[in-house]
Each structure stands twice: as structure tokens, then as C-alpha cells.
Amino acid sequence: MVYVRHNKGLKRLGNKIKEIRLQQKISQDQLSFESGISKNQISRIERGEINTGVSTLLILAEVLNVHIKEFFTDN
Image 1 (cartoon, rainbow, N blue to C red):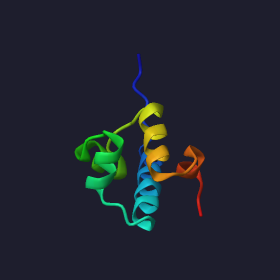
Image 2: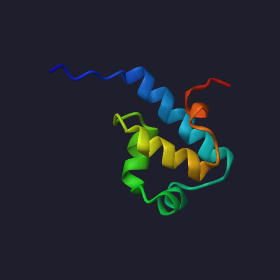
Image 3: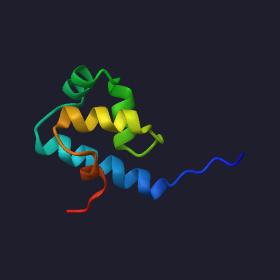
């Protein structure tokens, strides 16, 4: 089995999540508390270090009150 990782895409995704979080003036601590996702994991997602699952992205979108597609759009 080959492990596939799209580093550039993960960085863009993480940057977009961070951008949305900062626009809403939400700290990583607050996002962690409201989502139940560890602050360390949120930090690693935002830096594009981990290939996170769809369930995690859906939870983050729900807490940030955006549609998951917003994580994949360039504005």
C-alpha cells in the first residue's frame, strides 16, 4: 500500500481554517474546547502537518459556523 500525501493541499487547507478562525476572533484554545479536538491537533491541521479526516473537518466547520466547502475555496 502506498501512502499518499498532498503537502501543498494540506497547507492550503490548514491556512484556510486558520484564516476563518482568526476572522471570527476565535483562539485555538476556544476552538479546541468547543470542538472537542485537542489544541495540538488543531495546530497541526492549521500548519498542514497532518492529513486529517472528514469527520474532524465537519466538526471544525460546524463550530466555525461555515459549510465544509469553505475550507476548499480561495477567496
